[in-house]
Length: 315
Image (cartoon, rainbow, N blue to C red; front, side, top):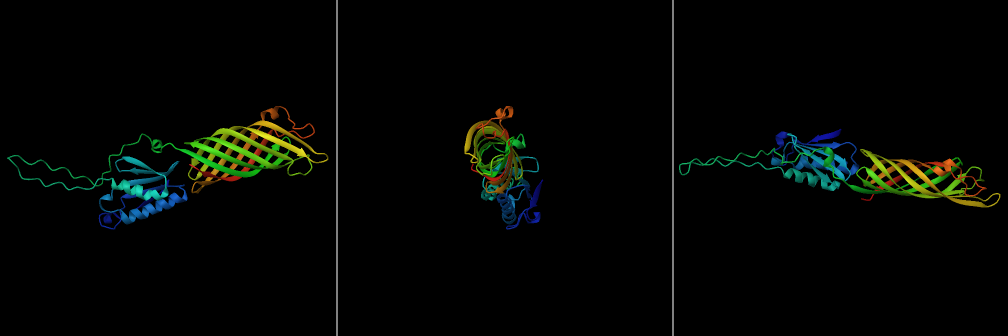
């Protein structure tokens, strides 16, 4: 699906300063705002400046790609070529350069009189101004987009709860993803500085945990929407303490397995809003309760987190 725009009228195609409706621009839905504005600028420029021999039958499809924007040019006979544009400002110059590569019309020389008793050579055929350069036909549309590597850095904050010990904590996560096509390798650090434990007198710092992990994931994309599905092992250090009736504290390290789903919505300029839902399970605590101190509650065997945040593309 897309938005189709043609430029001016065919009758005006050969008059200076007129537009051309033979070039059709199709912008896919879901482009980020900077690319939408660049597509509008392209349409306005073609309507204002595209004249004469540059007015040829051509379909320009603008599609989002990992590196920015993919411009696909197609001729009526099925030939096509692609250009990758990384900066919205460069879209108009790239398209104008593509159109300038179309061969100009040349007039055949008039046949001359016979010389030395032999007829003059036949005149070469005129070049059709509507011909495109000899584009190679790609094997598949998928191969048109070059592979890319990207790096994103995200920060999110929210709430996490744990069982069987009833724990509620404020949770913050710093996450870095290295993207290769739609696969990712990620690292994260999660910190819960404040937490409350049932059975312990009201104390906002009765529970604290910090964890680090490394894992892999898969990113699914549709327009401005993304969904990151990840799995990673992590090591979490848990501290539980109480001040009443006597001061008691204990620390414990846990190995946990984390499964997460992060939804993202592109905001433009490389930023996106994120919403993360994740779950962690500690295999050792699922088998048997583990206590940081015999007089304190056991550490959670399973936790569930919900966070809101933002992520930025660094590469």
